[in-house]
Image (cartoon, rainbow, N blue to C red):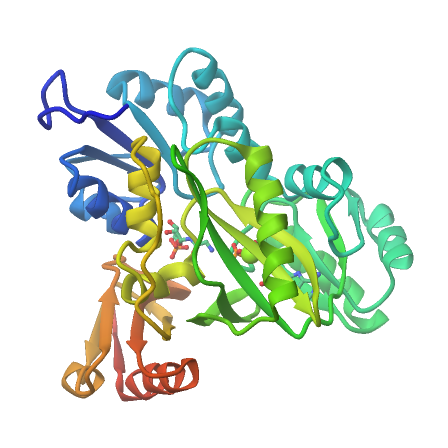
Length: 396
Ligand SMILES: Nc1ncnc2c1ncn2[C@@H]1O[C@H](COP(=O)(O)OP(=O)(O)OP(=O)(O)O)[C@@H](O)[C@H]1O
Ligand SMILES: NCC(=O)N[C@@H]1O[C@H](COP(=O)([O-])[O-])[C@@H](O)[C@H]1O
Ligand SMILES: [Mg+2]
């Protein structure tokens, strides 16, 4: 896999993105830098990656028959899952038939469902996680809470970005947590995981790249989540040597078990020198958007290079950096990002506007990036830029 032919010819390479959000948009741009043909797919039209791709398809990616039809129509050299909500059993079949799924179909299948990745990490690989139980009915749910104890965190087994997630802090929260989990999951009502609440000092994403040159790690990304959704991230998160070594060891074990080439976002909780595995994305991670300003190759550039079968011998880190998610609330198809003159007034600040067509409720629509002499200074600078931003939500 170490040659790339002319784009849109029989010798060229074609990549098909399953999911076309902000993360896929950057992957598409990076792939195009190698002269790769990019086909973007998602459940809605004009998704961010579609706006920079050669072609796009709008369909329900959870529908296995539709997924197969599009893949057989396009016959891509690389199938690149960008979200979890995909008919991953179909990817397993297609991989057997000779298609190439990034990083592997099994990785996409196992991480689509919290039960798959949790049982692999905790029960097969013996990695420390929060205590957990799974429950499919209200009765099982109450039993699970009794066994795990309060406080605990409840999540649909199929969800991301905090959808359907809540923390049970007292018995009074149990009923609401069940209903939230049944309404917020991506595949509708169903099975949940009940996890013991981890009282961590801080949490990180350890971006881990598997390529033909082996495994390399980015500097650890620290982050803060609100309602299970990321708002702030920075790099490098200061860590003890013992905690960093343990984090890399866990990341190596998990990513080796998933296999294939690409970037992985290994989510870890840190308490003192102890590292607790939470989950892993076999794809770029939202908290890793900070690498667009902090590294020579961002997490998207690394993903593209690794999945194309090219070497990633090392990663050059430029210095302390931070990101601040721009989450917009309202019901609109017209958002103005205003006062950009002030947002970008200081040196070392960038903004990415994703180009999502609408907001219903709340939605991450952009990100502010900043670099400075220290992590604290970079975070403060990103926050100043964010405070300067005016978001005008216009009526439909
Ligand atoms: N067991 C736990 N104890 C304490 N905090 C937790 C626990 N599980 C999750 N959290 C908090 O909620 C956040 C989101 O959890 P998780 O990553 O499992 O959800 P998600 O929906 O998969 O989010 P994403 O798709 O953004 O990764 C975590 O980053 C952490 O801040
Ligand atoms: N935590 C996962 C994550 O951040 N995924 C990113 O968000 C998009 C969906 O956004 P939307 O919900 O606004 O359509 C996904 O397509 C991906 O880029
Ligand atoms: Mg997560």
